[in-house]
Amino acid sequence: MQESLMMILTPKRRIDILRDVVDAQKQKRPYVITFCGVNGVGKSTNLAKVAYWLAGNDLRVLIAGCDTFRAGAIEQLRTHVHHLNNIYNTNDNIMVELYERGYGKDAAGIAMEAINYGKDKKFDIVLVDTAGRMQDNEPLMTALAKLIHVNNPDLVLFVGEALVGNEAVDQIKKFNQALIDNAKLQASPRIIDGIVLTKFDTIDDKVGAAISMTYTTDKPIVFVGTGQQYQDLKVINAESVTELLLK
Ligand code: GDP
Image (cartoon, rainbow, N blue to C red; front, top):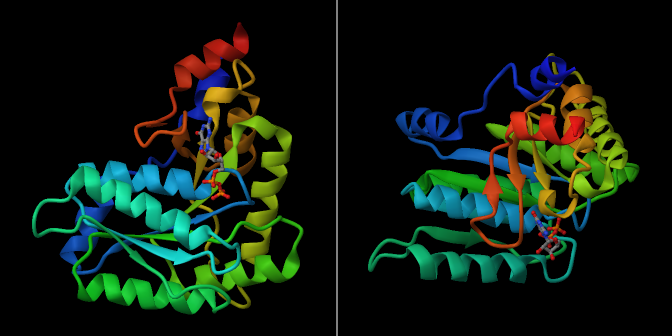
């Protein structure tokens, strides 16, 4: 049992963002990560934690405010950018910047502008925040698929909360399916590449969502959110999750 659980939680394909950023730098373009998920799971907070981690690795981060839907989403990102720059800024080097065009506009177009801006201004990474959406809301899922297919990011991360167990599995399955369904005639449609499992600090030993999400999608958990501070972002520890399950 222990071996099987360890196998499920150990990704077949490891995602090494820092290494892949170096490859993108060689191509003189930013590495692009898109975050998607339903509302309230911790998308923006964990995007900010990823920005904190990247800036801590001396990488310049552009955050693309593509949640053009929820009032306050852009302001929330602006606050994070302000905090992060207070932590990291040197005199003449802004480490984290926000690219936004307000609300009500086409998110796919803004993401594209942001990526081009990031390339011009020599940012190392563009983190694309998207509007939260329920997995059954077809028009919004189509819009997300458009954003992803038009911009072809290097990495598509699904943000799901550990708290909701099987509901998170349903979400990720339907997000994946929507990306496939809306890919039109593309030979190999982009799907979700990895998972950010948030609120891991709130679930005690109920770690089943971690197993179910990786098992059903065969995608690795790239980050685990373990609190509300920027430092609260970890990689999953397969051994301790397995131990908790078998306790
Ligand atoms: P979004 O709507 O998906 O962008 O969600 P937010 O980023 O606004 O987060 C929703 C709430 O969850 C906020 O109060 C966050 O502080 C909280 N949150 C996010 N990640 C974590 C986490 O890993 N642990 C805990 N305990 N709270 C979190």
